[in-house]
Length: 297
Image 1 (cartoon, rainbow, N blue to C red):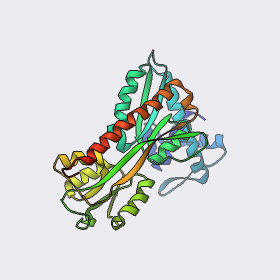
Image 2: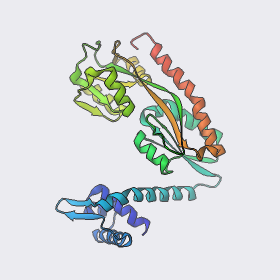
Image 3: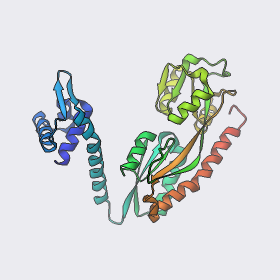
């Protein structure tokens, strides 16, 4: 088993097509087939079934995929660690919820870069479920997320509350909202439950999206309404493109720092976690300022 076989397996699992994988990896189809066959012989199982509609994972292939992802990530991390420029001692890998990158994590990155100039930073945006898995599998050191899971050897620290408000491209109250033009963003499971309780009249929706930026682009063209973090809603209202639906309830979503207990024992990681706690009040103050402004929000 080698990393080329692992990467080939993962690409076929995604593309479900040997020809497409050969194009993606710039190798011949014969090379793809040989790598997969060698991997199957090493593992002693069949990984794919091939038919008219492409290659599908067998039950054994689906199980192995999780291990292959871990192997691929560990290999990537090893290459990153070994290729660090002289003077760097290590890499801190952090994940963040998409919606809190701009106003919270970005400031933290600047602070970390100045405080620990000998540590390289790898930061990526993702969803809570994915980041939680990466924390458990040691692919991330720290994650800032909405929806952590309580697990053995995992520390969870609440940082602050994110507040979501309903805004619309047309001035209206909740009763006058055009429900057919409401765009639902599935921020996380907790938000989903809070949304169902707070605004049951918006349970049925035609359009669901996964990112705030996608919804904003869509609404700027088609018009409609959406729940967004108060700071982002504030910017759109100040621009004159949206209005607050004043009688719509706010939805509060806690934000947490999540990390393995062993990570907190490192001086650098402990400093990173403490700095997240230190930055949290400023985010809360900024959110409160956005909510307290009388002109539409």
